[in-house]
Image 1 (tube, helix red, strand yellow):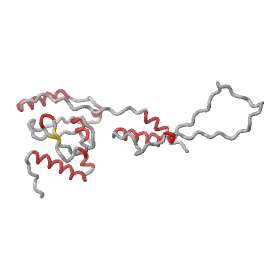
Image 2: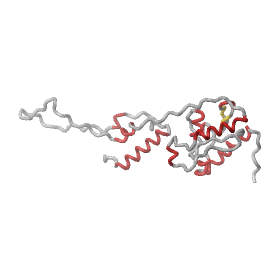
Image 3: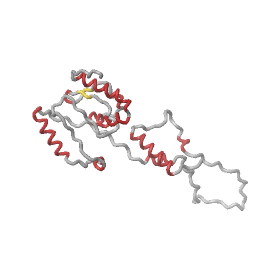
Image 4: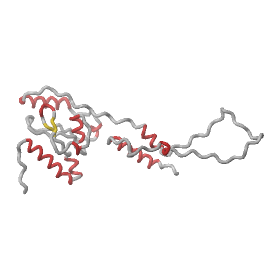
Length: 217
């Protein structure tokens, strides 16, 4: 069997890392015999009986090298650093009276400053803190801009599960609030077919707030 080219090995290595970041460990539905991952040892050829003149080897003679692994990239994959654990939900602070909400948000914004705490600072062109009524009944939380609402809900709940397992209902949240999970607008721009699902999620929020959906034009 011909060895894999460096480009193909690197591509497969990157794909396995991608699967691990998604939480996919085993790639097979059944157990695979470990002997299948290595080439079979070459069978010894038939040799004539040794004569008295045939030189013998001492026990200190070097042994032949083992056959190379059939999939060397599997060994490389095992060297990848483990995924970071998902953080627990932030501690719940004491509630503030409504008249102090604006001042509290201002202090948080000042504390963030021109944030460079993560690698995203190298590619962003502005920092989006948020705006609107500090006493609003509905607040949208998300990463910016991102692929899905997965990052936001994982941070808020400290729980990792597929987005489809969160959508379609309300979830009790801290301090008596309710959490509704939907798709990120950036994801809807890439896949407009998902807008109907985001609209269904928004209607759940409207029912919770006692609002009627606007009439179709």
